[in-house]
Image (cartoon, rainbow over all chains, first blue to last red; front, side):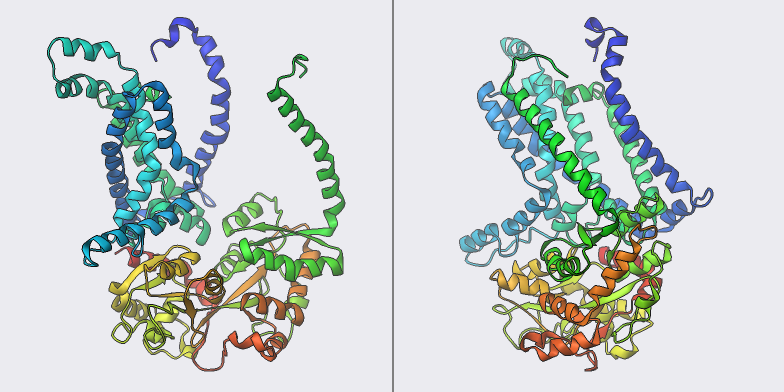
Length: 283
Length: 353
C-alpha cells in the first residue's frame, strides 16, 4: 500500500483504477442501491419488510444458523489451511506451483457435482462408511452427510483455497533473514514460529478469515444439499421470497440486513492488529 | 485496430475469432428479423423434459403452422416478473407449476386468455382466465425393491406415516404443497373433503413422523437419489423421475395406489408481442392426440378427457391414476394460491426446529 506513491503519481494511479471504478459503479454500486431502494419502497415509503423480518421467528432462526455455520466453517478452514500454507511456503518454487495446482483443483469442478460426489463418498452406503464397516465388523457407522458435519465439509472444500492463498501470500512476503537471525540468536523452531512467522502472517490470516466468512454467509446450495434440516441459510430465504412468493421488498430487506451485519463484522475484523493492508496480501 | 504485420499465433487466433463473429452476426440478425412475427419463445425445464416438449409439442406445431418455437430453460417467476416490470417481455408461453400460475395472476403478470381457450370443453379441469391447465403429474411413494421388498414398504400415504408397520427412514419434500395433503390423508381425511386444508391438523400429523425423517429434499432429483444412495428408505416423488432412475439401473419402484395429482399450466406474460401465436400454441398442446403422446412419454395424466380414454386403451397406459377411486388426490391450485406464502413459511420453520 505505501510503496504506491513512490513511483506512481496520485493522478496516474487514479487513471489506472478508473475503469474498474466505473465498472463497479455501474454493475455493483448501482444494483446495490436499487436493492436498498426496493426494500423501503412499495407504492410509497414503507417499513413493512423490516417489520416483518423483526417479528419473523423463521428469519431469526435462519440468521442465527447462518452465522453459526459460517463461523465454524471459517475456523475449520483456518486451522486446516494454515499448516498447508506453511508447508507450501517452504517448498522450492517449482514444487510449490505443482502443490498450488492441487489446492486449486476443487475450483475446476462445479459445486453441484462436488456436493453429489461428497454424498457418494461420505453417505450411509459411501466408501468411507464401507471401510469403517469392514474394519469394525459392521458395528461402526458414522452419519456424515445431511447434517452440520456434511454442510461444513462441503463448504470447506470450497473455502480452503481462499484461506490457503491468502495466508501463503503473507508467508512468502516475510524476509527469510528474520527467521535466520532469530535462529542465530538461539531461538528454537517453535519460538521462531510463535514470535516471528505467526505475527507477520496475521494480515493473511485476517484476510483469509474475512473472505471465508463473507463467502460462507452467502452460501446456499452446498448447505442445502449436504446439510440437515436445521442447516438452512439466509440465502435460501432470499431465494424463497424472490422466486417462490415474489415478495421482492422482503427479499431485498433480508439482503440489506445481511449486508449491514457482515459489513460491520468485516470492519471490526479489519481493525484487529495487522488487519490494515489485508487486501494487499490477497493479490 | 491494425497494429503490425508481425503475426503471432495468439493474435492470429483472436483475429480469426473476430472474423468468425463478424461473419456469423448477419446470419443471426437476418434470421431473427425474418422470424419476428412468426416465432414464439416458450419456457421449459431442461433435460428429458425439454427434449419431450421439443418432440411432442414443438416439432409438429411448427410443421403445421410454420411458427418457429424457441425453448428457454428454467424460466422461473422472478425472471417473468422482471420482464413484465421492465416492459421487455421476450417469453411468450410460460410452463408454470401451480404456485407460479396463481402467484403470477395475483401479481397481475399474465395476459388474459382467449375465450376459445377458457371456454374449451372436454377437459378434466377447465381453463382459468389467466392460466390454462394442460396436464397433471402424480406424486406418490417410492422405495428400494431390494432393501424393502413387497410387504415391507408403504404403498399409500397412511403407510408412509405408519412407522410401526413400515420401519425406515423417510425423505420428504421441502415444499408444503402435496406434503400437507399427504399428511391429512394419512390422518384419515377423505380426499374429497381435503379443501380447505386443516393446516393445524396436518402439522400435528407431521410432528408424529418428524423423528423418522432423515432428509428434506431441497430438489426433486434428491427425492430419488436419497433412496438410491441409501440415505432414506421411503420417499415422496414422481414416477417419471423413478422411471429414469430405473432405466439407470437403480432398484426403485413407485406406487400408483395413492397419488397427489398436481396441475401444470401454460400462461402468457403480460406484454408478449406474439400473443396470437402463443394462444395457438397452447390450443395445439391441448389436442387429444398431442395430449396422449405427452402423457405416454412422461407418465402424466392428460387434461383432455378424450386423451385419457386414448391412453387407457393403450397397453402401456396402466400408469394412469384413477381419480375416482376415492384414494387419489387432485391438488387445488386456488387454495394454494391464497395460502402458499403463509403455509410454506410455517413449514420451513417447522423443518428447521
